[in-house]
Length: 215
Image 1: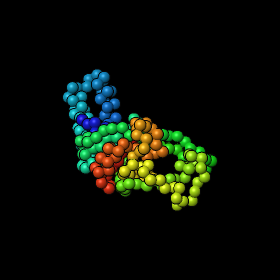
Image 2: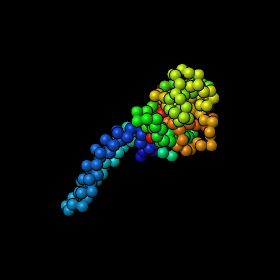
Image 3: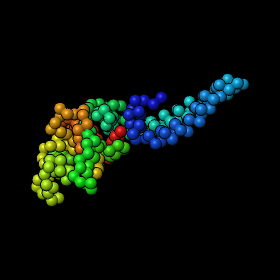
Image 4: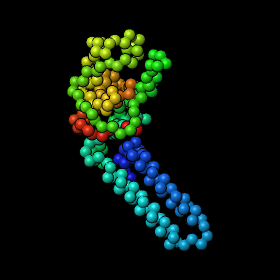
């Protein structure tokens, strides 16, 4: 049967494929339920249908297993703010993290930001040691400050992202935090925050191109 690893990963990464297979199984389930109540249906017919259903479920499990990455990958549950670091089917580390707050920041009807963590399958696109945060426009709007030019010195902050950062693209990072007491809560602007120890582990475990599944 499908293991916990598969449930954690494939709810987000392969949900479409799983649903397609499940919907293909649905007529069989309806047939089994209907025929079992029909008079005159032989035991051999029911056994044959059950065998077909078990075969299709086994094939589904094999497909899921075949798509589990062989190396390290990360799964992030943004609902409960937990992460799971895996190597193949083995869980290496499970702990709390912080993800998007879903707070809406509005400067005007045309300029507004929803601070949510994107869901889906991503890859590590870049890794940085001692990262420098280049503050986006919303950071100044949030503080009630005027938005400076694109490369103004006030945009650059040192030491606020922790010792490492891993980029998922589109400005979303896995990084550290100065406010570790808030880990486990949905308080970020969309990035994924980890404590110092976990950040170092994830940074060293995930090479460029590693998969990250967020659901």
